[in-house]
Image (cartoon, rainbow, N blue to C red; front, side, top):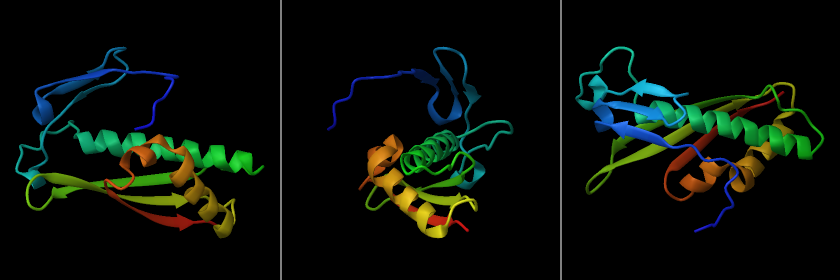
Length: 145
């Protein structure tokens, strides 16, 4: 496991698991949770799932990682669009697992450049990619000019 020197730490507390409430200690993020109907839950309106939060965090972080890599190559990817779809499903023989599909688009960059930046961001920079490597399937669709 990699040891890090923390640059930033945020703490969140969940009460009631997937049918409860979650918030960060600084109160900047406060969400009500419920299990979606597709998973046998009540699917309450105006609620989210842990997958909502993971998809949002991974999309934002990965977009930042792509822009970081692009800047190292003297290119600008500050307008890159990252759409992150997170699926949850049953895992054999027991339990659940996640799968991710990323759609990355920036038509201001060539297809070759954007593909190279995505690969480098995924393999070397993004902490979400590091955390999920060899644990979940991550597929990419890359759209450059």
